Length: 153
Ligand SMILES: Cc1cc2nc3c(=O)[nH]c(=O)nc-3n(C[C@H](O)[C@H](O)[C@H](O)COP(=O)(O)O)c2cc1C
Image (cartoon, rainbow, N blue to C red; front, side, top):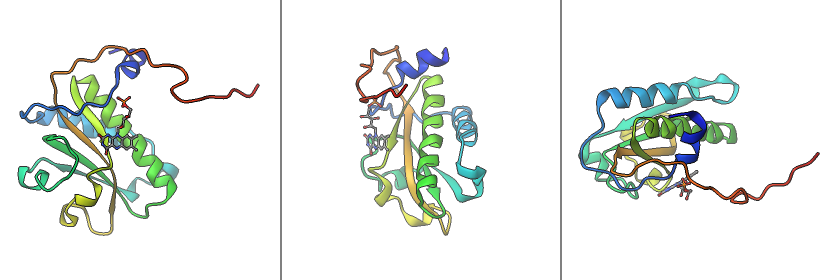
């Protein structure tokens, strides 16, 4: 999809089919995540954990039955890491949409993520829920004052 149309069509998807995303689709999402910008280029301060095990997914709260959750964990939890995690998650979300997958940002699950699934020394800070969806993506009319803006010029 053309980039700007894709941005206009992006939306939170909270309804997923049971069928798992393919490994090729997951690969694209991980490429997109790794293409994300992080503060000072300190990629060593981030970890991605892909959760697809139904037993582990069953322990997570607020994931709307998503068959795949990608957790972004950070070393320190400072502001730069939180912002960077958001950028990584956004890249994943747009790459999901590009493949016709449904995705949504997720903080609701963070406290329920079993600590043994996350690399030692890292703390989950953001997650993305992903799955096949019957929803379609068409550019939306988003009001320009959805985020109040002042222009200084
Ligand atoms: C930092 C952040 C945390 C979010 N956490 C959740 C969440 O835990 N559960 C959820 O359903 N949506 C979550 N969302 C999605 C927002 O609710 C959603 O993006 C917002 O309502 C706007 O809707 P739209 O994405 O369809 O434009 C989160 C979004 C962001 C940016």
